[in-house]
Image 1 (tube, helix red, strand yellow):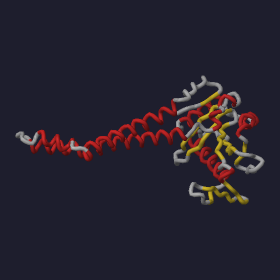
Image 2 (tube, one colour):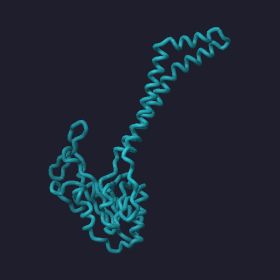
Image 3 (cartoon, rainbow, N blue to C red):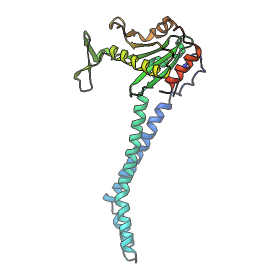
Image 4 (cartoon, one colour):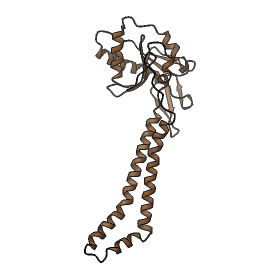
Length: 255
């Protein structure tokens, strides 16, 4: 759970190589285990080592038992090493996916936001919906969702389509309508927790206001204009410091 705020103590920046090492270290270990598995398989199946080990105990009283144990170890060791390696590579893939979920854009500019604004990089509502870049401040609550990249999206009126990895175009929900519905979700959740006061919740999408027009329930803000846009929002009357702190606590619990 992370809150970024101009009014709080600055968060120490992560060291530049930390994320890279967190991903590559498990991958290197996984590849090493796969190399050990390959070497063990070569020793077992491509060399006479196993046969010689079986021959060493051929005349002993426990020859059958030792032979079975030796053969079992020889046959299972490469597979066991390979399983460990695959598990390590799976962990590295998980780390890579986590690293790919970078800090959202407004959270990265927390130091540039107006005084008193606090950013929660992501929240997850009880219905499972995830909402990024939630900013709590004198204005109430505002959040910012990303528009699809122009190179991979197209629209005709209210109809939006996005090009997927297979290069096919598929219809998607209008991002502005989705953000407006997310604002309703956040508002209902706050109303359930803060019954004696209605907190203002404003939705915005990050994009080019010249290319996409705002709607009644959602604004379009250029990323560089976020600090000025927040500063222009009127302070909500009745949102006392205690109420504001309570709203922050409610939303922080969802982070």
